[in-house]
Image (cartoon, rainbow, N blue to C red; front, side, top):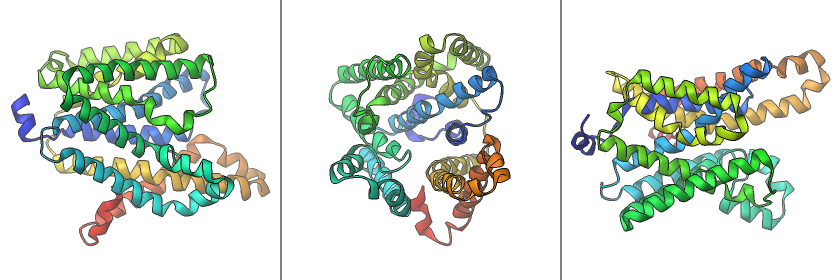
Length: 328
């Protein structure tokens, strides 16, 4: 697809497939999927899971940049993020109250509401809101600001990761400023779109991209502390062009995968909480149940199963009940 065609039709079905895969990887990561495997194999799975969140941010930025010249696109995008976050926040408020709000003071609550979140990983929506806004103004105001953001975001990402690995210091405020962590991934996604717009990514064949992916995983396994953070940051530059080259004819199904990816991400946390609650309160009374629930594959199936079913029910009945669209 040419850059001209992109402007007229900013839709990339291959990226919908990628977002669906990433959503499942995120659920798997939260479940410590297959943690019982030998360490090298589990490490390999963990590396792929670690790619998921940065790449999800990068894909979101790529798609946003493809529409950036559309009038009102920033307002439309931010309203959608706020709407999805608000709906799920209301739905999850009882869990938030039980797990966090009733245990914290006013200062902690205000900080969590403003900058982090009161439960699980809904910080993602706030981070996306802030980072997309920063990306938009860096592109629209001055061209040099984009490269300042790209460089600064990459340095923040690498610095934060290396600090977590090597423990240079313990930032007490880290949970409240999680959105800083993925500025680099957002700007990498925008850079990827700039390269795509100039047809630079077409020069990379799927075989070359798969080889680069394999090399990145191998280097991460061999030199985890030294290179994994770097690979995490550049992996979107491999995965995005790889999935863009997928030959897809059923765009309707791809759109459904995109909608499912948001539902999977948002819905998983209720079932994770329910699973953890059962593990702490019910399972200890039954040793056999405790041992079964401790198996990561069981946990993944118990969470992903109802998430899959309910997400598809939402999409099935959405035409009849239009308010369901606000869930994704």
